[in-house]
Amino acid sequence: MLTLKNISKTFNPHTVNEKKALDRFSLHLDPGEFVTVIGSNGAGKSTVMNAVAGVFLVDAGQILLDGEDITFMKDYRRARQIGRLFQDPLSGTAPSMTIEENLSLAYLRTAEHVSPFGLSAKDRAYLRERLAALGLGLEDRLSTRVGLLSGGQRQALTLLMATLIPPKVLLLDEHTAALDPATAEKVLALTRRIVAENHITCMMITHNMRSSLEMGTRTIMMDAGRIILDITGEERGKMTVPGLLERFRAAAERELDNDRMMLD
Image (cartoon, rainbow, N blue to C red; front, side):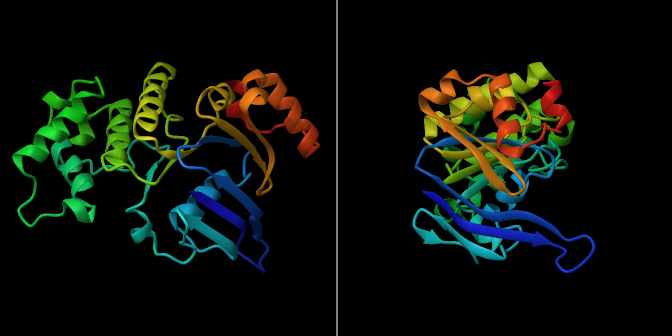
């Protein structure tokens, strides 16, 4: 489904601020696979997602999506196949527009649903049904401006918008990090359900080491732009947070320096 072959990326090359963010990074995800990504500060986690989303072109390597080479594809073209959520609840929605207007934009962005006449009554009923499935009562607030919603409500809405038309790949870049613990758990539960129901191939960056083992089917740990740990199956099922810390220490030859991960 998604294959990254030896991709590399260096920012500010040939300057005093040169930073090698990805170092011949390779990863393959099968259809429906859900991988969680953890690592220290500056490990390259978000850089991987930006490379997949097309925020920048990689210096070397190849990116394949469902057998198609998208290495040099523009980001707006990739967006039809790749959904993404960010850490900031203010990202991913238009705050001055209503819930219905935001959902409509997300729904109409695919060629199959573009209509010069806008949404039909059937389309509106479908969107209302999908919104009701979130269990947040937002289906009764369709005319509410999104900027008035709480952070958790906005992230749930953004998650729905990104999966109304199930993408081939869903990228979750610490999408619960800015939420309080109780709200984060609710959004994670919604994430787990929506991804499973739609059999979406998913990558999720998280600073919560417990969530990295409980969510999805596979966990990778990054450091210095490369994968230093890749666990799944029985090994992952038996892994503990102290075990992850020990594996990081052994592979990176230093202690984990991400304060948020340590505090969680």
